[in-house]
Length: 293
Image (cartoon, rainbow, N blue to C red; front, top):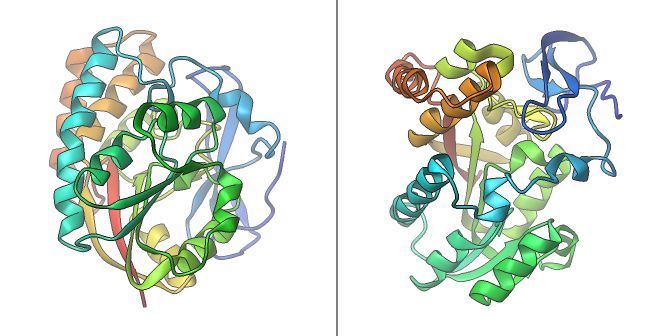
């Protein structure tokens, strides 16, 4: 296990225990989330080292990598994902009309394939070899392993997207520097992450699926993203909701809490989370539209 002695956002050394939880998805191992006493940023600590993280993804139930469709939950997930592809493109077109697109953590390539049909020149980054191979073989996409980021010329992309990926990246500040370098001066960066200040996060506490210990190394609130963006020469243009995530995360949280899918309480808590999002805490997951300063 790797122990961080400094806050990744502000560098402070005073850290306090925020929450003790488990890997409810796969291993049942126990983990802790600490909170920076200076800026309030929360992150998993201790955490698996780079060589250990792979085993926590080794499951056929990891939907974004497998595209499984069996069962009601997986079926609903896939239908919602298809619907949100159009919503994502419509949102993106308001900030970036077209050009070169890099999707980091592209999984099986559905988003990239969809965007390529509307004229974007697309490139993907996917660390998992099997998932990467599937994206290439099924859609004919250009998808590189993670180390491929180091081979791309600076200032290449008009748009870089990371859909629920930044929370998985070991070197948070190193990745933000890469993003700044790879983006064109007038380009757009879009980062979607779970919001640990959301109503459902407070409701489920250690059982909140948005923590996804230990795969999620960092747990972002709005203030954290603002500090991180400014630290690396970015500014947040706007913050947008991912309303379906409140229901998805609540369903998983109910499963972790009770051992089964409890649809009615999950749907109710997801609805409440979206309703309460107006109290400045935000939705279960948030999309940050970011530009260079």
